[in-house]
Image (cartoon, rainbow, N blue to C red; front, side, top):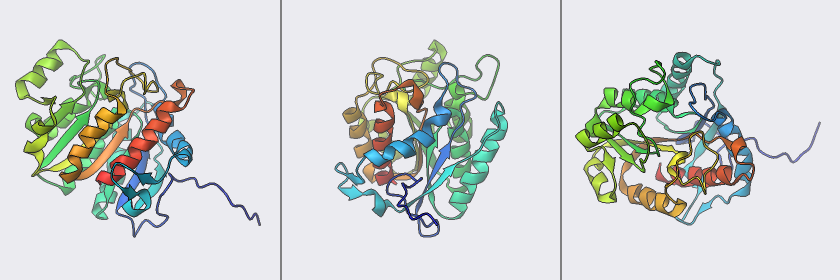
Amino acid sequence: MLKGPFLSKDFIGANPDYNSSKIVLLGEPYDCTCSNRSGSRFGPQCARLESIGIETYSPYFDENMENALFFDAGDLEYPFGNAQRALEITKENVDIIYKDNKKLLAIGGEHLLTLANVQAVSQKYDNLAVIQFDAHTDLRKEYLKEELTHSGVMYRIAQLIGYENIAQIGIRSGEKEEFEIMKKYSSQKTKKEELDKFKGKNIFLTIDLDVLDPSLMSGVGTPEAGGFTYIELMDWLLYLKDFNIIGADIMELAPDIDITKTSTATACKLIREVLMLL
């Protein structure tokens, strides 16, 4: 028998026991509706490998990842080209996580899968709100005559929970009609205090990594100049520490685009901090 020791296949700091865990880290490696640069299906796997390079201690929250009690479930397997089936597979598994009274932290994968995450969470919680950090509006009813795409995930979520229960932060790209929708429903937020209306709600947090400036986060499918610095994003997340965050996902890491691995390393640190919010 081999004696090892062997490197763990799990994200650093993971609890090996599912039953005693409070959070489930779930890889959602699907990118078949990507409209620009593909490759986010490799995001969850590469984040696990790169996580060995970060510390488990968060100086922002003064806490260790091990105390978050999260279980790394690995990556789901999806059929290529079938967005509807990918959503079904995702929802089926996230349903189980919440039936087991745990919380989800998903790593993507394209942003479309957030729809399935929110659908599953909505079966467990009422009074639900979604806070979106993103460069893009994601409010298209369809894209290239397809209704299920990452470009329309927030439109689909709005049909489920209502625009009044959505906050969109960091947005700087979209069609004119999408910006008009945000203006109509005041869903775009530019000040942290505007989130206070959601303090009494159950909040699902979704972060598209392209909310960060591409000078820091180039490994995404659709980079947009003018994004947040990491510190600016952390200021927003720290503001949410007293909110009731009942689940989250971090989407759209396309690691092979950034051969320096800076994007993946940054995503790993963000995963650590979001664990602290859960």
